Length: 216
View 1 (cartoon, rainbow, N blue to C red):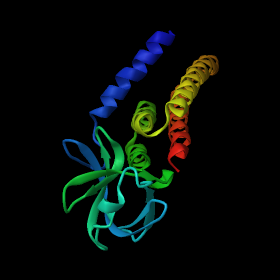
View 2 (view 1 turned 120 degrees about the vertical axis):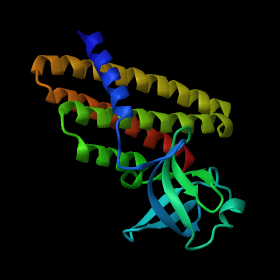
View 3 (view 1 turned 60 degrees about the horizontal axis):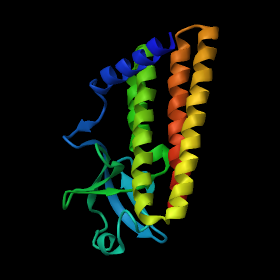
């Protein structure tokens, strides 16, 4: 039964991935809104304004964007908040067509915005669970990107220790999800599919923001 259940989740995720979302889709990125550049501050934070006049902050740590690059940006120029197919959440400088990796606050992250849009149109338990499962995959992709960066910037000792911690985290996640699956079987009801998917997303998001600490 457990194998069939996880196969079902995998198949559902694939079906959801080809369904529509409230975003403009490009070959390599999902665009979730335009931004207007305002300014940047040390130790590596950039500020934008949305069409709704909300100011958002994103971190680049002078790693994802260099000082030489960002000093050329002009106040008022247009950017796009995007979720790149390979590099994850970031910004697209429209003037030169260049993607830059940044770390948004959780509430401003494209993954969160796409999940919210997905949930607003979800009609069934299957739809809702799919929104969470897709977010989990996206958060895992974000963590993969950061790990690739750390493999180049951190010392071998730090990277080895972090890799070991990551293995233990994944083992914990697997164990927790297994126990939650058993609990769901005992409780019964399709609502447990939503709770399970939500928990998986929460674990993936938590690990990403824990990893971000190594860049701050």
